[in-house]
Every structure is written in structure tokens, then in C-alpha cells.
Image 1 (cartoon, rainbow, N blue to C red):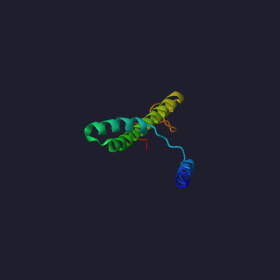
Image 2: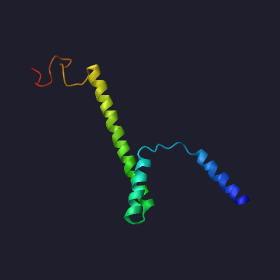
Image 3: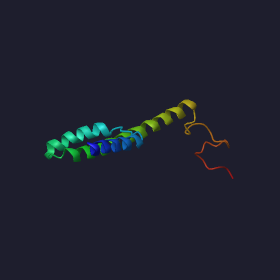
Image 4: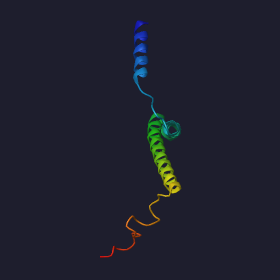
Length: 99
């Protein structure tokens, strides 16, 4: 009983020391991958691990695209898209400066 209590308290303290994990995409991917791995040949754990990795990758990709879209929207609303208007020297940027 003392061994169990010691192990439980050790694990509890280890869990308390860890920070919060961001599981964006991992939980959904692990669930789908676990089911697919189980159906494919009793490899649920491997499927869950692969599904977590793929789900996390997709979540990062989606977050990056959303951040880019938000920046583009912010630039468009402030009028600093960089494609219209003239440069500071009066040239539109399409022609070489006169010499």
C-alpha cells in the first residue's frame, strides 16, 4: 500500500509540474487515427499517434492561414496593401527613374 501511495504521489507531482499542452487538432486526429488503426489491423495506438501528429500539423497550417488572412484584412482596411498609389519619389514603380 505504501508503494502505491508513493507512486501515486510521484505521478501526481509530475503532472503538476508540467505546463498546459495545446491539443489543437491532436485530440480529433488521435480519435480518428485510433479507430482507423484498430480497424486496419489492431494498431489503435499507432493510429492514434499518427492521427495526433497529422491533426496537429493541420491545426498549425489552419492557424497560420487564419493569421495571414487577418493580417491581409488589417492591411486592406488601413489602405497599406502596397499595390496602389505612388512611391515617395512620385514614381509608380513600373518605370525606371529618369536620369
